[in-house]
Amino acid sequence: MNIDKYDYFIFDSDGVIFNSNNIKIDSFCNIAKSLLKVDFKESINKFITENSRSTREDVIRFIIKTAEEKSLIKKESKGKSKLFDKLLGEFKNQIYSEMLLCEKSNLLSKFKIFSKNKNWIVLTLGNETDTKNFYIKRNLYKYFDMGIYGGPKPKQENIEFLKKKLNLKHKKVLFFGDSYKDAYLAKTNKFDFIYISKWSCCSKVKEFCNKNKFEEYETLDLFISSLF
Image (tube, rainbow, N blue to C red):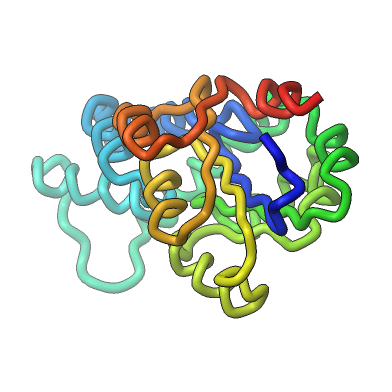
């Protein structure tokens, strides 16, 4: 692939730079089981797979709503939810240490040197503030010179912001993602797309990528290695 033609590289985080999808899915399942005393694993996996735009807040609201519908907990009155805050706090506590140790791409520094003056962006559904802090701790923040953009805003909203801020509409963009939603956003926004498959938890993305002739690599490191 000739990467010289691109002005911007956009990277999804979970499943692309980090092997972290299962860490987060397992944490959602654990908090549901420990705090609500029920195994929601199948329902949570289905919700995340079918709603790949969902932030952590969306998943937690789904857990609470499902528990209410099954009469496992009393429905809270509208307004600030103590249970929501409790589940969100527990989720953040559970993933923190694992995210600091989880497998990651090892060739980002090599790719940054090779790609010279290209502009790098992280676009994630993970919480923006937490993601920035996490990247600082993993010594990766320095590579993403054009910023890290994340939840609770959906990805398309952040793309619209970046289009205005960086004039992306008239730039050549390569997007690295692992989900159907990533591939769909690339197509609708006229970005080129690389499907990173090994750490993906989304079942329908492969068929969509094949249909749209998007290239596939098992890992980001394999893509980077292919350039040399």
